[in-house]
Image 1: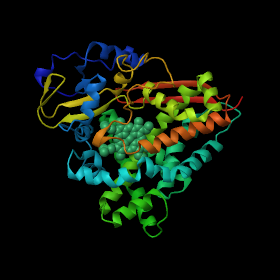
Image 2 (image 1 turned 180 degrees about the vertical axis):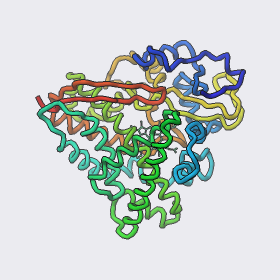
Image 3 (image 1 turned 135 degrees about the vertical axis):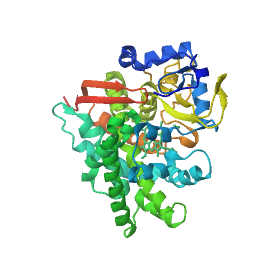
Image 4 (image 1 turned 90 degrees about the vertical axis):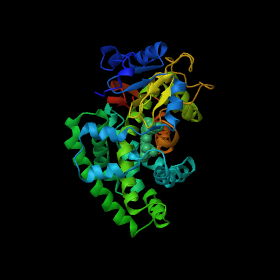
Length: 401
Ligand code: HEM
């Protein structure tokens, strides 16, 4: 629970723990957005309007809420906290953040990822080739987790077989976002394992540069764009940010697209529709429901004065289902054209570094599945929606019938 300045207690309170939110999160968010642009919750001040969220996400008076998250979790002194303090997530606006992001945003830009595209596609194909097609299978463990973690293995020159370790540790360290200190010992242990893993692979790659991402990162270090410490922190950060988010978004895309036979048939017949279909998935059912900021200096947003230190949550999920910005937002429509871009990857100087990579992964999964398995049947599906994220907790499907 975050204590807000008394002046903010007049804001309407949102209840993310309600049964209604658990059942229909996006409808509930949209209803809140119809009534209020700004509200409060146990997390802090909640922004519900698209323009307000968009502006807050790039507002220079707002910084990262990550350090407070570590306080809430009570992460003890040691290598994991040292990594966190020195990784990109802890830096606010300024030279250090800019210098840390610059080499990575270049390597993982749209053009940068295009250079890895055929390896990403090959990795996706290898994972899909191994999924049994003649019976119902758990697609989370056979497809959604292995795709991003196997791509990470490719990036750092690790064997494909390490994908399971990468997926497991990524899922565990992402539990920082639960804000629940019960998870802290497991998070610390997973970070310890990831740090050793990163050190091992960096050492191996130094003597054997090739054309993968880690080799390019080492070249950036040799060119003086990253320090040795920054390089290591980025290798850990990419593992941390990679699998968990991507796995859930892949699952969301498979569910939303393959469970609509007319759309699945269109994608099979015309794969050029896949990028716009994936964009609509990220609008209609985004992995990111909110992203956080913290007020750096006293300021005002939407007419509400906000003291420094106030946690701010931009409710991306609410904006995606607001009929003032998207016509018939509760209709899944891959032919949308003139509506504002989704905010699944945040924006500005904190925007997601992996957005082009993961978009390529999701598109490749849908391209291969819709081409090879036009009769794919979605079976049991279970979702969970925290105030922060959409999670697919169960996904059973049969690829061929
Ligand atoms: C569908 C999957 C993903 C989603 C939905 C997602 C979403 C996000 C969001 C919302 C942010 C915060 C942006 C903001 O507050 O403005 C973020 C930050 C970040 N993401 Fe992703 N992400 C995904 C996959 C990835 C992947 C695959 C990687 C790397 C391989 C990655 C690396 C990062 C990093 C490093 C940051 C921190 C950027 C910074 O603080 O400067 N993400 N992501």
